Amino acid sequence: MRASPVTPAPTATAAERRALLGRLRDDARGCVRCPQLAAARTTVVFGAGNPDADVLLVGESPGRGEDRQGLPLLGAAGRLMTDLLGEAGLRREDVYVTTVLKCRPPSNRDPLAEELANCRAYLHGQIELVRPKVVCTVGSFATKLLREDPAGIRGVRGRPEVRTIGTRTVRLLPLLHPDAALYEGALVELLRADLALLPELVARPAPPQPGPARVDRGPGEDDGSAVSAGAPGDPSPATSVEDDAPGGQLGLFGP
Ligand code: SF4
Image (cartoon, rainbow, N blue to C red; front, side, top):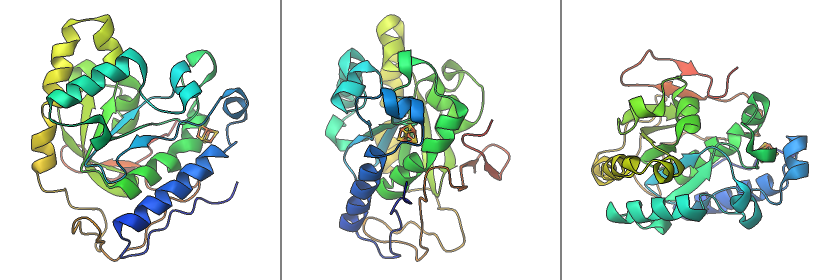
């Protein structure tokens, strides 16, 4: 597989970043780094939504319906999330939705560590190119993975924190999965309350970006440092915590 062409120029415009996001999507659609997943999938579910979104939602992996339709977070869970986003003042088309793994694991098994490692540059590239202020981890799996902490979702949900994922520093907001809320109705209120935090989080100034030259100067501008999502499997900065946990880069998809 050729390297992902995600290398925005220092002054990349929003249009240029959109074009690179499209190229990254095209790369993913032809990706066969995980042979079992590539053989079993109907389609690669790269992600969908506003490529300039302030809010990016990350779930675990595509399910059966998503695999068939090529879009993330569908079905009853998707409708619930859309409704609750609407109550928070966000239309579904305002946000960007993706998953840590872009191909459906057979029988909906958990993703393997190797598969997550293979796929991480796509997520990093999406975050680099969309440049969200807030990344919401949806459900326990994505939350544990991106926080690199085994703490259960119910203990950390609704608590925003500043995290660096790949090359971007964002406010990370763990959310319950809407599937859980559909199964246990009382959780709907918790998910609703957590999503209601988004307008205030988006209104905050973006957290400082990592690296001495990287300063968030707003849409269409950059800080002068070239970035590259690289190819899946490339060693690249993963996840780090800046506010309230020990510093240093952590391996997002480490063993
Ligand atoms: S790296 Fe991602 S896109 Fe490529 S085959 Fe694996 S899961 Fe699918």
